[in-house]
Structure formats: structure tokens, C-alpha cells
Image 1 (cartoon, rainbow, N blue to C red):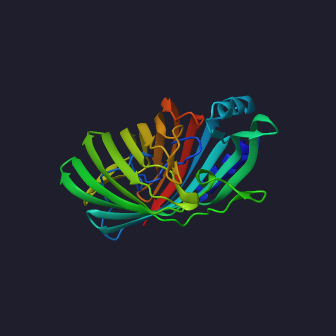
Image 2 (image 1 turned 120 degrees about the horizontal axis):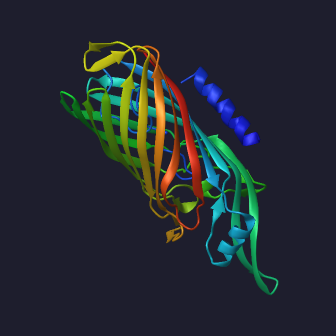
Image 3 (image 1 turned 60 degrees about the horizontal axis):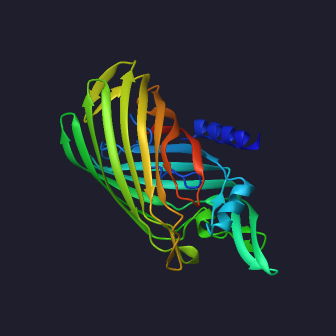
Length: 333
């Protein structure tokens, strides 16, 4: 199958280089090379340290059938559906100070087989139909996140998160001569700000991490406000194998495995188009995501996780998510 081949190619790319809704990728700010996979840690990098990574997130949806889209259109629900989404993110992190890390996120997004229901009046009656809008791909919006550690006491840490998403992504994807709606574009065209917290603690070989990150979304292209977003995560990581030694604020371990279990949630507010609220948009989803991270030495790490929804309320206009898979690799310098 074509989508399987695309996913496998992306996985191979992540192994060479180095994280939601079915049609929206995760924010993609994760660890710089240890512990959880999607949850943002409170730990910061040492001053002058640098990390480069690449992560691919594949999201398989439970797409609406044509008959479902037609029925929803008949109920005045502007529904749409995509078969799957692949988001590949290049991440760069740098330790500006021992307690301050700056991260940059550069995504590329591909949506497959976008379809939308349509309700219209013509020819003396009501017509409900389905439009096949094709695929959408291109660079997404660049995001920058600063992590300022304000609490560092023995095995407990806490940090403030502050960032911004810039309108750098592609917003001109068309189907024929008609531009796709803003929510189907790789970029939003909006300037968004992010604010959050991250906390973590250790108990022997087990680490617990949690974070919340709120994105204030502004109006972007096509007079569209895609809705504020709240990302919230909880993670437990268990480290096995390898020898350890202490260095500054970190414990380094050779040939280590981290077994990871996460709860990854995201709430999205209803979107507005030209000031009018779409009552069938927005919602909340929570994923249970087991995974693992392998670190052959202090510099390299690779991770993989699969998330399945345990809470899914994406709004009538959006289809459910079947699962999402995350694969990536990173190197510190």
C-alpha cells in the first residue's frame, strides 16, 4: 500500500538523520535525548550544548465514508476527512545557559486524500455531495520554544515554557484552481504564542515527567482562526542496562534502554472563519502511548512509540484517529 511505503521511507530517513487529531500533527517539542518521547521535560541542556534531531509522526485516521460525509452535510455539518497524515520535524536545541534551553522546530507535513461534504441549494432542490480535494503537502510553520528551569533540587525539577509559532509554512495548496481551506494547508499563516510548564522527578531508575503547553492562536490566512490548543502530557520512564557516571546535572549511561509509557492529550478550541464560530470543530483527545528509547552512548539516541486513543471527542466535523506512530533519532554535540 502506498501510505505504508511512504511511512517506511520516512522511518528510514529518520534513522539516517535526527511530536493529536487525525489531520493535525503534534506540536513536536520533546526531549533532547533521554527519557520520555513526546512529553516535554523540565531538564535543560548544559550551557553550550547542542542537539540535532529528526522525528516522523504518522497519524492514521478512521476516515468518514462518502455516505457519512453526505449525511453530515445534510445535517448542516461541514465535515471533512483525510486518510492519514505524516509530519516530519527537524529539531534543533541549544543550551544558552545551564538553566535555559532554546529549541527550534521545522516541520514538513503531508495529508493524504482530503475529502469534504458539501450542502448546497440548486436546480430546484437540496444537493448534498462529496468533494475529493486530493493531497496537501509542504513546509509547516516554524516554532521556537524557550525552556527556563526555575526549580532544580536533588531529583526534582521544574521549568517555564515560552515560545512562538511563526507564519512560515505553505498556505497556497490548491485543488484545481481553488485553494484548499486554511485547516488543510501545511501552514496556518498566523502568529501564535505558547506558554506552559514542565515538571519532573526521579525515584531510582524511574523518572516521572509532565508538561502543559497552551498555544494562543490568532487569525491567519483566509480569515481563519484555527482555535487555541492545550497540549498536556504525563510520562513514566524506566531505565535498564548500561553503566552510569555523573557529569554536572546529568547522569550519563552507555547502551541504555528507556521503557516509556505516556498519556498524551490535546484539547483544541473551536475554529472561527471570518469571525463565525464553527460549532462542529474543536474537541479533546487523549492517547496511551507505550514506547522505548535506545541510547548506545552519550551522544546518540533513537526512539519509537505508538499511541492509541483512550478518549476521543474531536467534534462532529472531524474523524477519529485510529492510532499514531512516532519514530526519531537525535544526536547531541
